[in-house]
Length: 397
Image 1 (cartoon, rainbow, N blue to C red):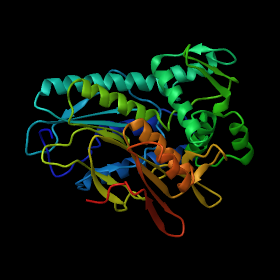
Image 2: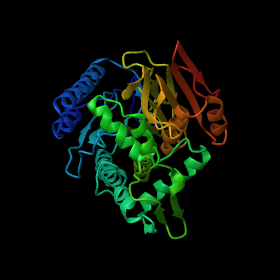
Image 3: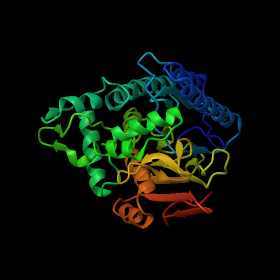
């Protein structure tokens, strides 16, 4: 155990996040109809966050991680450091905007200067990693790779290689359910969702033809990548935040801050729990923002991620469709749907939560059985609410 504690944790969504959301809207050009749809989306987003902030909660919510919005943060971005409400004065929480969401770091340790130094180092790390992996910035390494590696091998940085290798491994192990080459599809659906419209079947199939992990060749010895054609785009949305959570968690461990929790848009990894607690308290979100949590659990030394359509979806021919795309069809998976996964690493939890939304439940369980220390809970609602979980998924406390 480590020092500090309170009856639960609460995320504090600060003014910076709301400014990021409004800034995203104001920073783009729109037609009058598209502008109205987008303004409605962001106002709803801000209202939900405000209501969430005002409702007392004794548990930290594990919510579906949505598609990242355009990066709006740089090295000069503000870092807010506060003390979480606690009966002991050694708790510290840092929040800062990045990747279109809010990053929150919570640490319990008596050395305030050490903690604050680690927080600032963590913020710099997040900004650096996001700049490599984002698909929004034309100058990011991930975007430039799809231009430099067309028909010829291109060397990549250690960070990008780790992501490419992970994407390759998860693509093979999931039999194609997780595919980080869907950037063209992601861009298509993102553009139409902002305009409040749905692409045609022809447009979907046309974008799908420019996707496929089989068109990316990796050379592990030389650490190079070769891409088959010029208009392919990478999208690390299924594993990127998990990877960054792991890197930040490792940084905090390096600073001997073992009592910590890293949370990026519902992708979390925790270490030792606060003093007096068996674990960090986590509320597994339901299928609607105002719904009750599906379970309230306590965990330690583990990562947790939830994927689903709680925050982002479109309606296609009367069917709710998630922003999580099925590489077999080019369409979002049917909803309402949410999958929560516990795993030893945040990258694994992130990847498995996405796969769990796409794959058949029985196939997904067989995949989980190959990874030690994993557990999953899946909630869906078609005719009625259905919640299924592996035997190892914690019961409500």
